[in-house]
Amino acid sequence: MSTALKVRNVAIFANPIAGRGRGKAIAGEIQAKLKESGTHATAILEPPVLAPAEVLMAADAIIVIGGDGTVRAAVRRCLQVRSEAPPVLLVPMGTANLMARHFGIDWPEKEVAGRVVKALSKGRIHKVDVGRANGDIFLLMAGIGIDATIVRELDRQRRGPIGYSSYILPGLWAAAHYQHASLEVHVDGRLVFDSEPAVAFVGNVSEYGTGFSLLSKARPDDGLLDVCVIPAASLADLIQHFLRAAAGEHLDTPGVVYVQGKEIQIESTRPLPMQLDGDPAGYTPVQIDLLPTRLAFIVPN
Image (tube, rainbow, N blue to C red):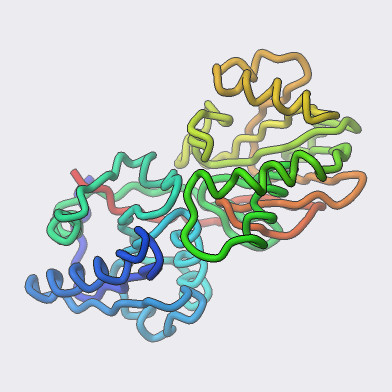
């Protein structure tokens, strides 16, 4: 449906290193274009956690320039200062850009400012569920196991913008050092996986950063979270399962569990790392559920 929004004040979250440093410049271009259309815009170039509460309280919409991690951080900051986040318009400039990919947003850089203004006035509103893991939100996926280990190691090594190649060394490190642990998974109070080494994914969309679908049945607006538990006692097991996932065959593999639900509990025989939307986010045990309200995204026509 059309946004039918009266957008008078906009907050622009811009990761200044997004797009190899173009994020800041694009924020300025959007700000100037919005001013021409009569809309007041405030650019936030520091980490989202530092965004002024008064700016966010006044915002009728937020624009996020960056990747999935920036989107998550901006929404989390909004929810710290108001009960519901304002509608979100994405300007993808990250590595995977999974949420933007889901909505089909891929704008030529020279057209971004004009398209943003048009989307704010004529776009569609699409509401999506918001997951919560140990009290912290995610929009895409929570991963428990080796992928979270890779994310944690990347975060430790990171010194600037990242690309797909940035994951090579963390991936090799995780392959050499990852220690498997048995998982116990409950979904809506029912035991669905018990006492085997495994990795787990809980998500809201089918897309995954590797380019293939792990949660192939996931829909971001169905009021459910999709859960995929993949048994793996060795690196060889993991490689085999991910090759099957790349071919779309992992759900037919014996031992793989795929269910949907609203409340998920995951425990392990030793603490395993968790990642949320590509950011490190603590360790097991994990309690996952959905926020009671959905998040509105502005999607261009």
